[in-house]
Image (cartoon, rainbow, N blue to C red; front, side):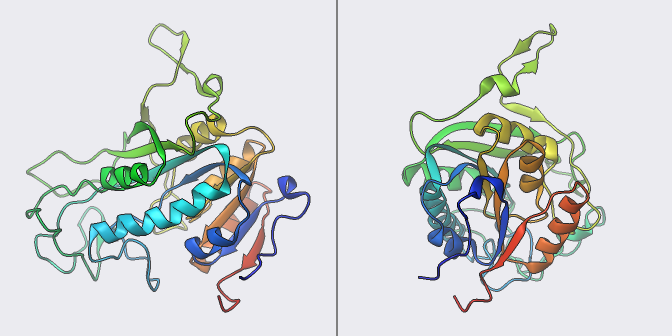
Length: 293
């Protein structure tokens, strides 16, 4: 097994980003080193990230869910026994037999050179229900499915549709490794209509945040803050196995935590480095994918 040059004796004082495949790297990480995980994997059939064997390009949604189960099984091992996992995942509609997607006049980034076929049993224009398929698969694999959070987007991406409402939300699932886990509800209390603090509700209304360097969707920092504040303490290690432009790492560092990121595309790691560098946040990069693994 390839031994990762990570986690020195002062691991709690260091942040690291690995360049390589999430499953391979998670498999080589030590057990129970991270307190919480916050991530958004590539969505099924919605974006082409131009990477070989990329997650999200599977022909069948069942294969997509199965691949994520394998990745997150290793993630569960890496979490502490009282750890939590916050999973943001989007849905999609069936392709109706089309094998490509033209750019939307209001959203050019949606163009794709491939589209998966319509899943067996579904019809053209059906909503696939990807988030719940993945959530139920994780639940069957042993995760505790603790909450469905609705991320309401006041400024959603426009859609050229006339026969259904424009989508203005995504799901975040809170999962835990065990029945009892660290959840600091005091840290994320919200103000009710009467002005008094109350337990945070399950609908979070948070605008999207544009990031000029990234041509892919990025987390808003305000979406990640409650996940990290509730799921960890200062000095803890936070992990994101699909690091992208580094929002999880940015919020973790600004909240007094350290982080592990895993990212397949070197281009995204450089974007994250520049982005975090604007806040004086640095991380060590480890080239796992270039070790012949």
